[in-house]
Figure 1 (tube, one colour):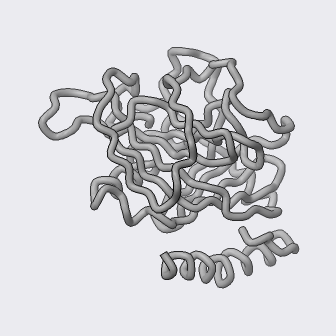
Figure 2 (cartoon, rainbow, N blue to C red):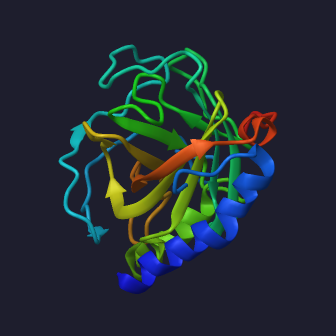
Figure 3 (cartoon, rainbow, N blue to C red):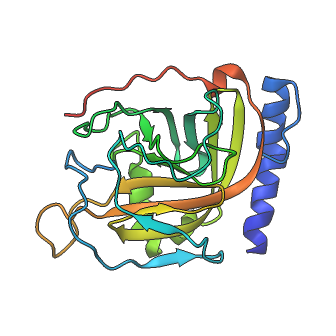
Length: 238
């Protein structure tokens, strides 16, 4: 744990802070659902091994909502505070984030991540919930890492989340929840990255189970406008 925290602080001091100073001119404050084209409808509960180095975040487990779900479960930030980009440097993940259409039959796009509008946004109480396909160029690295020692190598990794109002929120991965069939939500500010696990050894077809990576706030600060507002190019998955 000491080594991991030291590496985080070194990363912030030596890499993130100089970049923020150069791009934004100000100091940082400290800084598929689907796999292989299969649908992500949760069909059955399964074993839920959890690996964590942090106390339980006292989450609420809810059914997976449709993209157009309207029931808010956390404080709603101003309209300008909308997540636009997610980066996991250690895994090579860097995706624009878009709002899904208000269509319960929407099949998540490729080449982008999507967020659940009825949940929270960075900087507000509740969970910012991002999901993407477990495909090359998307959230596949999360799935691959989760299969190695239950994903323990991801603990302590940093996740950078940019928002439309030119802010950067830095989160630290604290929990890996595998084989899940319910949505993870917590009352305090936090982040979830979700992707599907696809077929599992010994089980026929698609299981409907997903991988959930939970991260907690580390710091935040201003971001360069261009960095915080990439141009998304969502495509219909084949």
